Length: 238
Image (tube, rainbow, N blue to C red; front, side, top):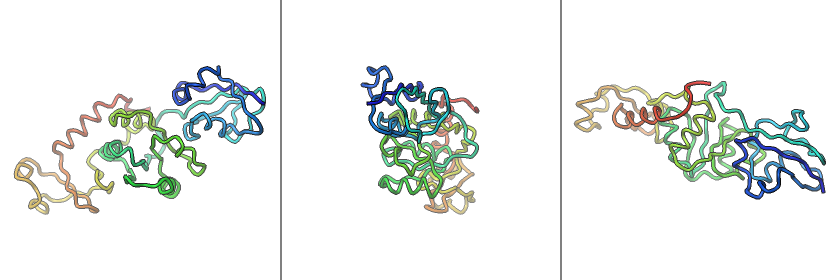
């Protein structure tokens, strides 16, 4: 039997099993085992790992851990990416999907996605998987994903906004909440027969989804978007 000393930073520590707290960070294992395998055996997906130091030297997830190693594991640094991220969202996070689309983000979502379909979207459409399923994030084909920690939808939105530095890309009123398509401006007269009397009276700027024909205007839903943006407890930029 081999042993190695593992230390996880404060972002990853809450993902560890309670039994780990009693082990003082000593990992017992047999045979050749990669850092990825040992870390994921503790319930932390490789997509959550930002860096690994072994005896002070930076190494990768494929490193074969040796007897007596001291391994430090840190999470992925919080902050904005170079390009605006695109997401694919697991079926149990429908309300998070709606809020991200409200803020203008490209989110592929269906309530009945299979695990394989989620993987295909990540690989072939260059999307980041958002899920609460630890095991799904451990698939070898997945390179980018995030384990959503919280249960409340607004807290989830704040969490994802902070993790990916999304505030700089927020652009409400540009994407269809129903089908994710980009909205297009449309003249009031072209849709006036579809508007309720008070909407006709008080609003003049409209957009339409070219895919599902849903009409949008800066009414109560737009005010809710603004309230959500103002409530997000995240920095404006990183």
